[in-house]
Amino acid sequence: MAEPRRAPAEETAVSGARFLIVEARYYDDVGALLLAGAETALKNADALWHTIRVPGALEIPPAIAIELEQAERRGVRYAGAIALGCVIRGETYHFEIVAGESSRALMDLAVSRKLPLGNGVLTVENEKQALTRANPAEGDKGGDAARAALALYRLKMKASS
Image 1 (cartoon, rainbow, N blue to C red):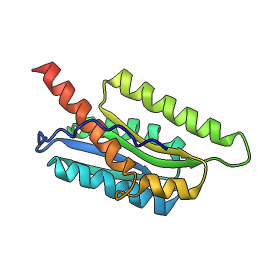
Image 2 (cartoon, one colour; image 1 turned 90 degrees about the vertical axis):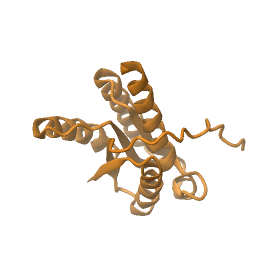
Image 3 (cartoon, rainbow, N blue to C red; image 1 turned 30 degrees about the vertical axis):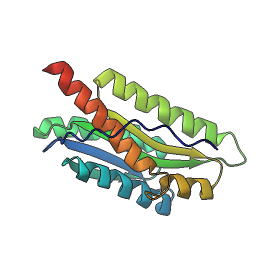
Image 4 (tube, rainbow, N blue to C red; image 1 turned 60 degrees about the horizontal axis):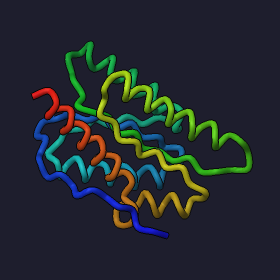
């Protein structure tokens, strides 16, 4: 398999920028690895974050929308959001529904709100693939999702200055 082509990590700190992480814990081990990668990436960027846990991938987009609305009422602004979770193919059509609909809803949310969002919801064939992709020492997809949200946040800040 070809290695992923990652853009060089931007090292510009985003001191004080607050990100929302919504993590689906349907697969605890995978979720913990994704979260570790995302937290490391945010820590390296000097960002702040708040984590919410939900049962599964379909609950991630509404949880982001609910928390963004509640935070705005409290006067808290999030710089972006990071979606973390895993959908493993099974023997039924359920995989396609969960993978497709969670992804569609995340994209709708990001575009409609101009929300810097990193999608770290894995869609894999089996648990071994999930653990490899989630592990910060191997695939680091949680870190990739956080770095994507950071990159979009930096782009948004450049556009507004």
